[in-house]
Image (tube, rainbow, N blue to C red):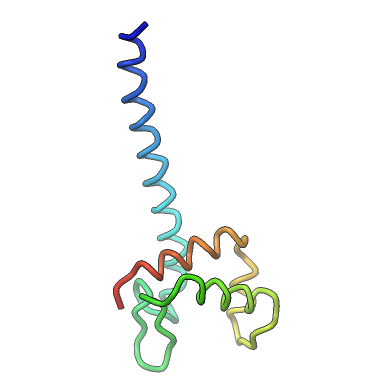
Length: 100
């Protein structure tokens, strides 16, 4: 029985690592959609809002305000509605973790 567990546990750990990596990859794909206006990894050119290194909580609040129509926008209100609240949190976390 111990032998079985010794082979199963490492396999489960590997699956967990693959799953976590897939989730990080998915968030980076969502964040890449922001690059047109906010630059690669949130490092925007002059004239656009930089997202890299901002507070996750502040980014979440801004995204929620766009999504709920509380913050005026030209396109962000439409884009933000395409994501769930959980996805917006993950995207905000991604940009918060980037170096400005």
